[in-house]
Length: 291
Image 1 (tube, one colour):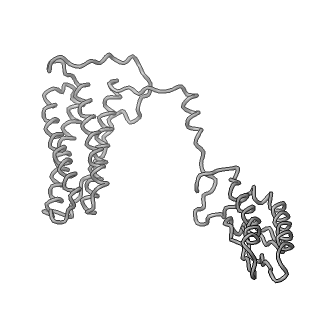
Image 2 (cartoon, rainbow, N blue to C red):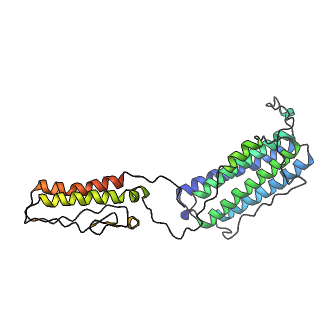
Image 3 (cartoon, helix red, strand yellow):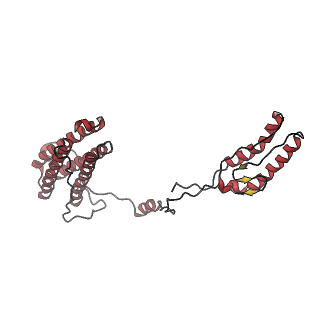
């Protein structure tokens, strides 16, 4: 299977497998320091499951059993399904000066750190994995590590080793209530954007443009004419049709002249520039996130 792996996959798998070996070695060493039978039961069950997952991942990687999948870890809740919140006279914590001072809290904390680190590394490797079977295996392995971390945390929370500090109820509710659900549940259609500010000022703009149109036409020679039949931002300059919903882009005027000089052409374009600048510089008053 090595030929079917990318360089990034090989390097990430190297980190994952080395990490799994280190985790199992650490958990073997922890057994001699555990005093609580409940923690010992958690450690032994997790160690057995961890080694099983390692062997399955190796079989998938080496194609000895490519169709095999990583087993799913089920959290065992022993009388403490609901977490306990708040600080209740937490015991002081300091580094141990010798191995004789290592207690159950230290072992549980080390186990928790191992599982958290493994879950992070395996999920990062999953996101860089191209092989679909290997990707699913790494993803399940990451979830298993997260579940084992939570199992250890539940034990620590019950024993008072890991207490959860809380904020004031008003602070918590204020932050939560800051976020509101979106009102538009339909993503099938996108409503057209309408510049409300431009729509309100459209009648005045039409009047100004028509006035400029008449002034420009009177300045042209008799054998010169200007045809403003184009549509600008959905406004028919001759008919006065103020249909702003048809678009916000400005289409240039179609100027058809015969033998007119450049000064006349520049004056004719001033009407289009006036309208284009006005529409382009009026942002909508209300801004909403894209639905």
